[in-house]
Image 1: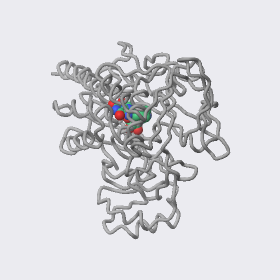
Image 2 (image 1 turned 180 degrees about the horizontal axis):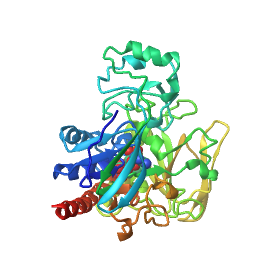
Image 3 (image 1 turned 90 degrees about the vertical axis):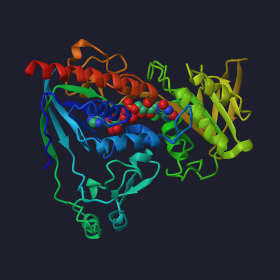
Length: 427
Ligand SMILES: Cc1cc2nc3c(=O)[nH]c(=O)nc-3n(C[C@H](O)[C@H](O)[C@H](O)COP(=O)(O)OP(=O)(O)OC[C@H]3O[C@@H](n4cnc5c(N)ncnc54)[C@H](O)[C@@H]3O)c2cc1C
C-alpha cells in the first residue's frame, strides 16, 4: 500500500512535465513538503518527446536530467506516477485531495534490466512515439524515463505473457497482485501543471491526415527525427520508407481558425523552423523545404533564429494558408493553394507534409475536480476565485519551455505564500 504523509502545509503539484517538475522542485528546495502527481508512468511530459529545443537546438534530455537529479536527492518531494487527482475538496489553505493510483505491476526492486520485455510477446501502439511504433507489453516508456522502472500493460495481466514477465525477473520486481489504489491526503495549496495536448489533426479534413499516410503532425515529426525514435532518426515517408527530402510544413494547421482553435499557439512557427533544420541537416543540398505560412511569429530572441533559418537557400517561405492536401497516384502529398504574394495558384507535390498543429489544454473544461476559472480556450486564468489553486506552465497558455518554466516558478512562489500563511496562523 502506498502511503503519503501530508498536512495543510503541503503543496500538491498536479502534472509532472517540465512546469510541474520545476514548480515542485522550487518549492521542495525551499523546504516545503511537496507531493507531485503525474498520470503517465514517468516525469518530463511532452518535453521528453522532443528531439531538440529551439532556438539553441540543444537536447531537452540535458535539462530533464538535471531536474531528475534534483528530484532524486530531495527528501521533501514525494512523486506519484500513474496517478490522477479525482477529487479536491476544501478551500485555500485546507484542501483534501483524492488521488487514484493505477497499478504498474512492477515494484521498486526493478533495475530496468529489460529481461521482462524480452520475455513477453504481445505488442501495443507506443504512445510515447504517438503510435508511430510498437512497444512490448512490458516496457520502459523511454530510455531516460524517471522513475527508471518498467511498466506492465494492464492488457497482459491474466495472460501467459504476465507469467513470462514474472518468471524472467531475477529481482522479484514483478507484482501481478498490484491493484488500483485510492489515496487521500491534505494540502494547503495546489499547483495545476497538466500542460497541453496536440490538436487532433484528423479534424482538419482538407489536409487529409486521416487519409494520406505521408501527412504527419509536428509532434510525430519530432519523434521521427530522434535517433531513439520509431524510425531511428531517419526522415522517411510512412507509406514506403523512402527518404523525405522534399518536405512541406503547413503553419496554423487548425489554429487561428474559427472551425478549430481560435488562438495562436505561438510555438508552432518556431517548431517548424527548427524542424526545417532537421531536414536541411539530414539531406544538405538535396533538401527542399517549403514553409507555408500566414505570418511568421518569432518574437523577441527568436527573431535571430528565424533570420538564420531564412538564410538557408534550401528553405522557401510561401505566404499562403493552403486550401488542401491531396495524394497523387504515387502517394506524394500535393499541397494546393494560392501564394498571396502575387496571387499565384500552386499544386506542389512533396515527399512528406508536416502539419504544425496547435496546443490545446490537456484537461477538458468539465474534468477539473475543483471549480476553476478558464478562458475561452480552456486555459486556466489567474483569478482570486481559484483560491489556493495556481496554474503553472502550459496549463495556463500555449507556452514555450522558457516561458513555461518562468511561469511555474511564479506559481511555486504563490503556493509557498499560501502554506506560509497557514503555518503562521497555526503557530
Ligand atoms: C511540435 C512542438 C515542438 C516544440 N518544440 C519546442 C522547443 O523546441 N522549445 C521549446 O521551448 N518549446 C517547444 N515546444 C513547447 C513545449 O512542448 C512546451 O513548452 C512544454 O511541453 C510545456 O511543458 P508543461 O509541463 O507545461 O506541459 P506538458 O509537457 O504537457 O506536461 C504536462 C504533464 O502533466 C501530465 N498530466 C496531464 N493531465 C494530468 C492529470 N489529469 N493528472 C496528472 N498529470 C497530468 C502530463 O502527462 C504531462 O506529463 C514544442 C511544442 C510542439 C507542439
